[in-house]
Amino acid sequence: MLALLAAAQEQWSIMFLWLVVAFAVDGIDGPLARHYDVKTNAPRFDGVLLDLIIDYLTYVFIPAFALFQSGLLPGWTGWFAIIVITFASAMYFADNRMKTADNSFQGFPGCFNMLVIVIFALEPDFIVTLVLVAVLSLAMFLPLKFIHPVRTKRWRVLSLPMALAWTFFAGWAAWVDFHPQSWAHWGLVATSIYLILAGIVQQIIPERST
Image (cartoon, rainbow, N blue to C red; front, side, top):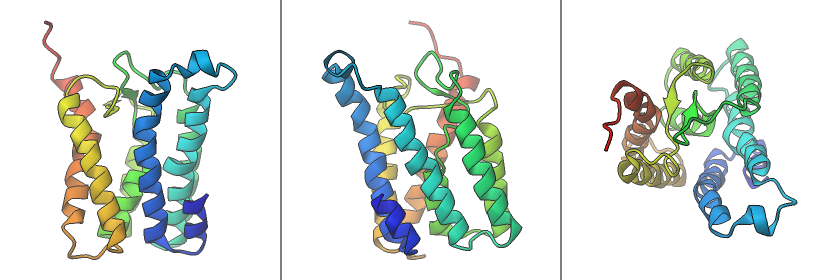
């Protein structure tokens, strides 16, 4: 809600700071829930469903609104992006095959918060932004693997620090109001590329049996 209020006032840096906080919380709420055995101690509440509701708001809905409202996609392109992002993500979040056997994601997991903060930081040509939105929306329904940096065991020793680094660089970029000379932008791009491509590379390079 704090992120949405900031977005409504077009205070983009503050909005992203709250979304970075939400991203950090999302990384630890699952391990905490499993550690304290919430399924046994609070069986009335479905933690998976609650997580999906919050993720849709913070990963999809608010970033899509920010992308539209910011004017980075002019005219019909803004409408195209906001409709495609919200609809495709809703279908993905309702897909009961979204998780793989190794706790990765089957298809791009709708993390448009990560895409949108990079777009705000770099401000590429609107055609580039439109293509990225279209490609990642399509990738949600392709047989491509995307890692969960906490739950995917393979390469977790690298993936988890990358996710932590992404959180740091995202917060740094928002803190300096996306100043074009900030080194945070390069860190944000590098960690984003790893987090997007690591699962696909794992598909290409099979894991050696022990």
